[in-house]
Length: 280
Image (tube, rainbow, N blue to C red):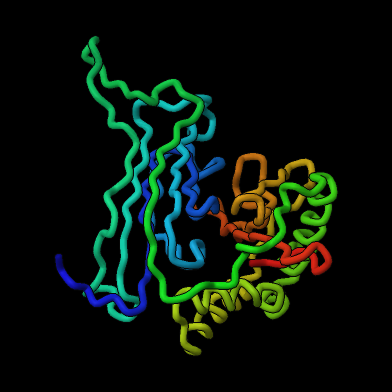
């Protein structure tokens, strides 16, 4: 076996979705193709997961295939596959390689009537899943020991989450990048450790957020009746999402340019009920 000399491991997935769907690692959504954007086409891309798994161990990866926007069931044309890559963060081109076999949905085939069909055709959803093993040189202080919010009274938790989102929404409308970065400091610290950021790289990330806010893009309205509460991270993380599954907080892009909205993925947790919710 080739020795890749991995000192600072960088784990990533590469999902390819030819349908509407979600990919989860450690019970946390890391990639999605939902809402009106999923009406046609495909979506793929690289997704880092160091900050999702938090420490060495074995983790479940789940791909949820869902019908495209406007459809009620899956078709023979729908599918999903997920590749698994590992590299050294400082030498990723030379060291990048697959560390686990690709995970794929069942392939379409010719049926008895000589027409293309698929085992998933007509189903309301379909899941593919596997377990991967991760080896990291650190243990991150994430949400492992946070409160299981799913066991709290749902109406009270939803109200607290909604209040927090309203606060963030106001910051987005004001295009106040410094306040947003202040609220996101816990998340920033976690990702800095997960991806071995030096001070320059950390500042680059901050600058990209500042540049986004400086574009003064319109923010989609936040209407309670159009939102739903979602728990993940085995109950220790919570978010508000729109009824179509897309992010509650979005900067609006011009439809004339054919660009997708910029979705801000906000995950909240509570180290204790007394300390309350924070972005992680």
